[in-house]
Image (cartoon, rainbow, N blue to C red; front, side):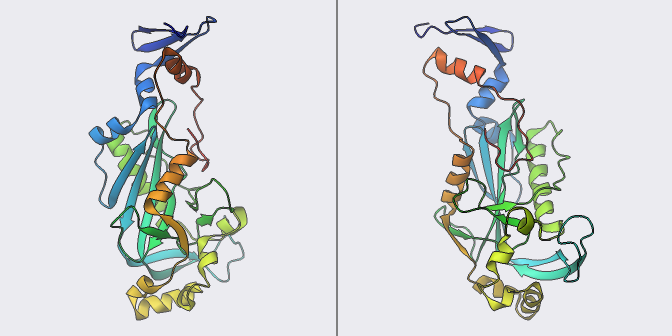
Length: 290
């Protein structure tokens, strides 16, 4: 070909040969997965109840899950707990209401070409349901939702998934795997023990950062009392603003993952995809990039 690269097929493999004679190969199904995951998503997956929007760019898929205001029973670190996180932490059950809860579940195609839940998932609050991509989101006043350093390219409101049950990973059916992934992520966010791990490892949680916005949520005990008095008081709390809309959060996630559609105009472009194959990514890393 005129760019000096040669391409040929052999069975289910695509081969590329550079002008210097270097040869590389890639399975055809992985090659097309690398190009774009959107077709597989649209044709094989039915998002579960609560997922109000899906975005796909290149090998990254984002589900926006929304849950209406409601009471929750949480395992919250006890005041007299000697340990602030980890083994030995003492918990007590608290009952508080939350406003609209938003979860951005982030999936990415990683070697060997499987779309998998990453650990770069984020949670936010709103006092009203999302009706437009231009709606602003607020930071969630929750322990286990970590604040990233200023200027960081990490998730702005990272859901700690250290103890996420990843039993969904071996599931071959994409529809079941993605649906089970979201279920496990929500369970990890809402049913794990809330402690001060974020304060220790990331510097702060959004609960700690939000305590000054309203006296009624300044402590978990006051939040409990306010919830009993008026379960919907949370819709009048001035949660910390992110300054970002739903679409801007999505754009930021795509940017952090370097998500884009590969430009293919020449054989050299195809060869670049083949030779740039990466080893399996560590899904436990919240900075996972494609």
